[in-house]
Length: 127
Image (cartoon, rainbow, N blue to C red):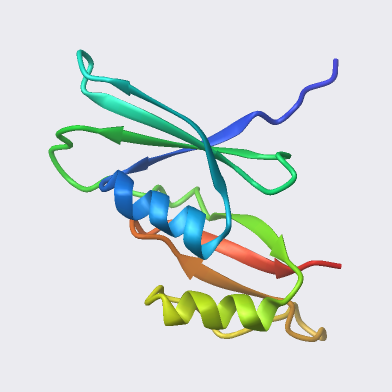
């Protein structure tokens, strides 16, 4: 069997803040948005420039408390050609970023940026 990755879903507290982060800080584009007022939630789907990946943001109208990000979840990753420019842009936008890092014995090739809900996104230098 051949499985294809379709999407990753993140539950968000403020859909507008999350859409701003993923579109302006990471360059994703919204492909569709569907509101379900009877069930009190909205789904927004975003994709990368090459449309290889979809991110589903789920906004529930009245969450009782902040979502707990499980200790088994770590991050997802995107790549960019100009890593330093991307990091500076993310910092200028007010997002929390780590220093540039590399695996042991390698040059710096990635950093992490934190979205408005506390999810980490690894930004890797495109090869």
